[in-house]
Image (cartoon, rainbow, N blue to C red; front, side, top):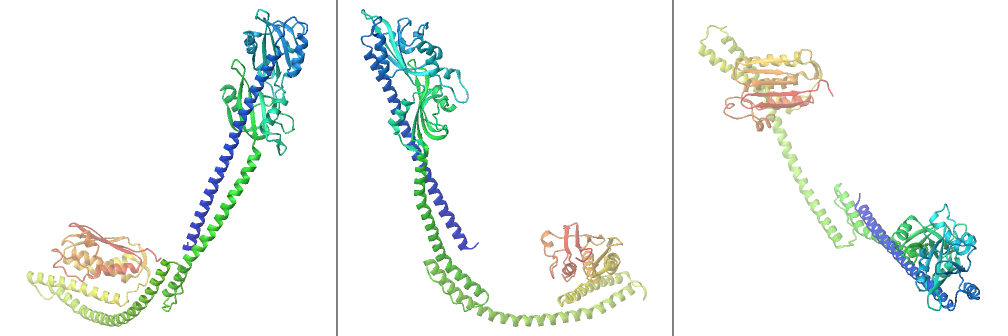
Length: 630
């Protein structure tokens, strides 16, 4: 990846990340602010509706108490006055009973049972001499007592999707009672009644208009007010998909648990019938403190969602524009940084191709770029000067190398000539010594024989050295090129080498064991392999323990008893002219080229060589070559 691409990528990632983070944080902040504002308004509106709810109960209670002044049991106009009060206060029920609950005047049906005063918290307070009021839930039996089947049937709400006996057989009322006293100020009767909350849509619409007004959004009121009997909607301006009021539907289980069971307010976002509302629920309790219903205020979420989208658009649009401008500015900055670097790179390419007349046309946009261009120009001049010096040195080295090659060639020719001339005399000397030692020219004293044997051994070492020098001369002239053919390894390599070095082993009293399969065939150059193996065997005979054992194995290994060598010595044994020099090898003659030549011959066949030893006990030199040419 180029610097330009990397910088553009980094800039794009940073700008995108910053824009995204800013957008997310801003959008989240807008969303939280709108949610808090809407929920705060719902909580406030619920306070307003709740206060209005209690104030209306108190107002009706006060008006009933005021109008009840002067009413006495047994008077002829009491029934008429009660009917006028019922119409004026918009009450659904207004009855008069004695202190024991016996029906006197009102909407009682014939043969009605006594009013259960002790089960009614409002009537109990009135019987104690107080004007009392509150919200109560009247069951079906009580509705029968207060107004007969007509009242019962009119007030019961059917639950949508099923019914619950505890809710649908009851009706919710604002309930009021005032004591009626005789001349001795004893409570002898109770004037009581109430306004039904079930199906009282006029009341919830009045509360909604008080708080939210009559505005609509997409054909839905901006806010709603609902009165619940238990978890059942009995008066509401929430409308379902069919545009009818959602009476008989229920609140969620979470709301029921929090409000009806725990007696706490619940405020949050909620799905109400067919839309999302910011909602607030408050428990409704009777005068005994028993929770019998809920008061709900909901604020339609859709207008706030639209406001949120508008604000986010107004916020994100500038953020995106700023992000785009930042990217463009980053591209300009990257170009101003990378363009000079690109020019320098092209100049460097021309310089590497040998063009030393590079014209550097760099616009110095920044101090660092200017310094880089200056340094490049200085480097260009330095390279030109160095190239001139190198060229001059190369000319000198070429002349010197040519002289050295001529000298080396002359040396190798002389070496080859000398060693070749020494080969035949050494062979003649060894032959003559063999004839004398074998008593073919007459009996020879033992002392003379021993001297002759030592001379012969030295001649054998000289012969080995001469052979190595001849091989080295050929190797240096590049004449040792393998001509690979299919050969029998035992017959064409192993046996000739054993025969050749056998006398050297015999002269040192060493035993040579050969372990090689007769039928092993390989692809290789027999002559070069014989050179490699002969050097291994000569090395074993020369440095092995006199009178000891040597062993030839395949993988080609020559093992011998002897002083061996250390790990450090083993690292250099295969180098040219390398010899181990210590007390045990001081009197051993050698050229230091045998193992080197072995390594070269094996390498020409694609094989490898190595040496192993346990110092003071044995040494083993091995090589491997592929069975067939690769």
